[in-house]
Amino acid sequence: AIAALVAKDKPDAVVVSSAEALDNLRCILEADKVPLAALPLFVSSDRIAEIAGQAGFARTFTMPGADDKAIIGSLADTL
Image (cartoon, rainbow, N blue to C red; front, top):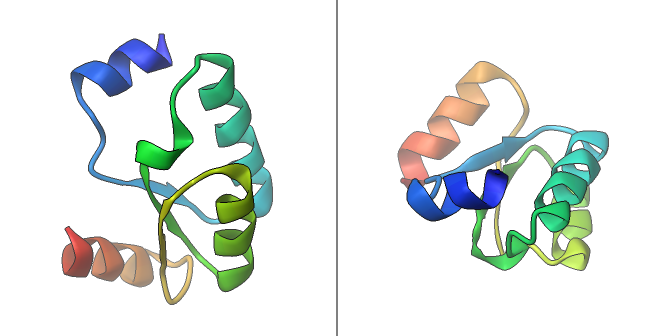
């Protein structure tokens, strides 16, 4: 189901603000055979970016925080 959605409407960004959320996202995507490297992933810390890279995400952007202003600013500046 997720693979079909990603193939039809490839997301411009996926936002993750915790390592636990990243792991849950990874499990869902891998279960549906969605390639992690293709998704643009915005994370809230260098630590989460490192974990994401080790998991197979290749397009990772580190935001300056997890609050609304940091998320919106990062998305606006990058997309």
